[in-house]
Image (cartoon, rainbow, N blue to C red; front, side, top):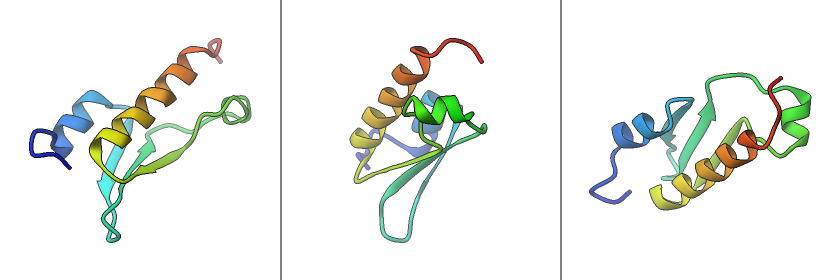
Length: 73
């Protein structure tokens, strides 16, 4: 993770996710809410992972864009 990006920064930017680093030194994020079958079919994920903070941010933003494209459940 870059020295300018902390877990607190990531959590503040993505409050609907819980973010942590695994023992394999990968970053992970899990949603704080359950997804419906329709949301899963649309491509939303419960949990995502990445090699670094920049990659995780990109994947989280992709998930937010997908979610924004769904009509309210």
